[in-house]
Image (tube, rainbow, N blue to C red):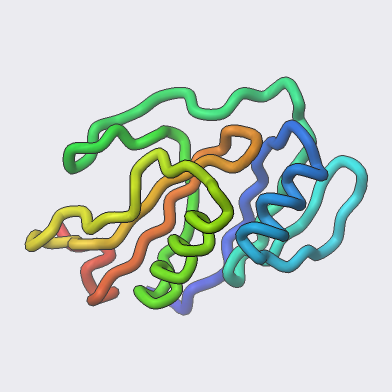
Length: 140
């Protein structure tokens, strides 16, 4: 695999001020360029943009994965285990409800990972995960 490059992702939000509250104040992301219609965020080294689209809805579907109904679509990032635990505590402290509580998925199997799901204030589903062994990221 070549060196990892930052991804770019843009998602709809209902309210730019609420997006700033969620991504800036709660998740602690730093803000880049912005306008009244969009905000660029440093999403753990990736370029993430929230675009004002008040008519858009959030989760369209759910799929079963290891005993949980995973919201589709969703996005997130793979963190270190320490950063994953710290983020879980930050989200809990902010009173954000988890769609899927922080837990270990595929325990004792290939691809074992820590995972958690929650929604932003516009209904976009986020998943954050971590591996004790990053080599398990694409394990079968």
